[in-house]
Image (cartoon, rainbow over all chains, first blue to last red; front, side, top):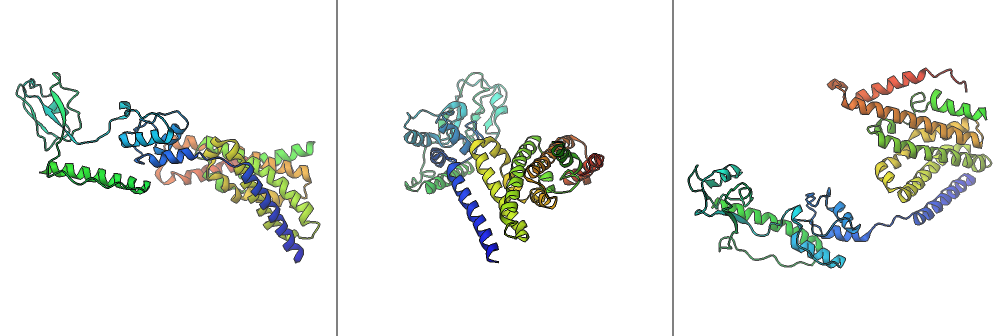
Length: 205
Length: 193
């Protein structure tokens, strides 16, 4: 009985020592930089950077395969933080990967130049442009989502994007700076959602 | 020498662990969706099975038998297998991150592969020597890998085939496995061991 217990205990002890040694000997070094970069990224997993998610992009940055200016949802702030972390020069966002949506914009048609070709009317996904063939067109500002799809088809380049000015109806207090990384990330999302709601509210007006 | 060759042919074809002894069916069904994972699983199992067959032989011969503790065989062998799998996982993670990524959750699954315990117990039952045990384990693993890779290749074709709705998925997989088992019956009598 005692021999059985001792034999099994000895066997288990020997194996335990072996595994303990192996876990030190074959330790895989996780890259701590990847975790830090990953914490800065906005975790939208949108894939606009060309990688299948935020973590693969963080790994690519850490490996030196990707630049730090490929994250449109993170925008200027993320690039600044990444530059601080990695000791690199901050760069403007790479337009190949999309543009940061900072302030809501609407399209404006310069009515003196417009030739009434209706191309922008067809391009508009929300029917925010009114006008008929050979008649002057105009944008219903409250309907415009600022998608910029009408700019490309215009043959005379008479459509501009103008930022929506802050009015007493749309202005609100900026969010306070927070110290916790997680809280800031969570708030950034809330802020983005509220900004969307605000634009919707403006449009409903 | 011919003795070892006979053991190899016997374990790979005639007494194939999966299709004739019906051991290790879980990874056989679970990891056979894609050829690459099947190959990786086959390689990992081959390594683990050979090593665990050797280790369990040593434990049985030099620890359990001298102390008259043969009745502890099963629990001791499970301990050995668990350690060997854990060890393999560490080595694979260190040496080949790619293979580790492919195998992922399947490496710990080898622990519960009953073919591994089956080999260890059958080695004792057949009173194999050291080298015989190793060859037996290796042959069993090669047979397992062979069948797994064949099955994965068939399943890849089935995935593209027009299977009737009630047969889709696991059903047609099991039917295929049954047909493969029938085919392997043809080897019986090739070697008498």
